Length: 242
Image: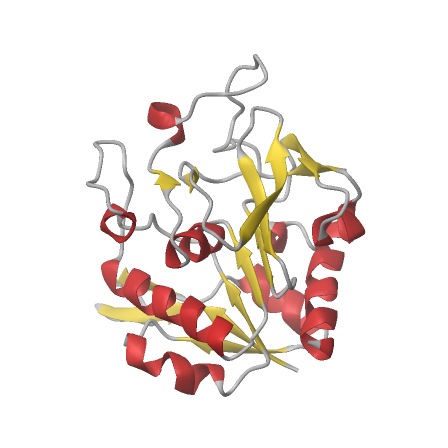
């Protein structure tokens, strides 16, 4: 099985790039795929017109974490607290989401991936949780940009019992958290299937279960927690049977 993985771009004056831009994907995610006998295919940040051709080479696609999504793609101007953005990557991945759906390629979306899928389908985002998000349930806002090491879970989420996520985690999970943007208005065709205790959206899925989005980073935890690896295994199984 071949799984496409979206990449980011790093600019470095050090070896091996020598003042050049380099496409990269996170090693922990690559290790997860390889340990599960999956062939990763790293998609370069390219032209939107390349989406169909790239998707022809894979059975499913993982949308990875990365910079903030430009607010212009959901009809807003940037607020002062927005982080680094990368328009070229946004344009490519927005096209990739839409083309993957047209071509019936299952999607697993992680962190920024959840956000780009939501925006591609017509949803909106909180540009900065601290500035724009109001906690629910009479609770203070949770720490969504954790200080703990990346594989350590820091807060709980509640999961819809009828969701794909519940088949993996049950109705309660303990996850890590590295984001200051988040889904706000959820796109038509997606359903909220998990929330943090303060009301933050932590999981989205669609009706036919070809799209699964999580706000945390299971690729940082897969070799420490069995259920995080099982999230990937379940995705690979869906790809096989889709």
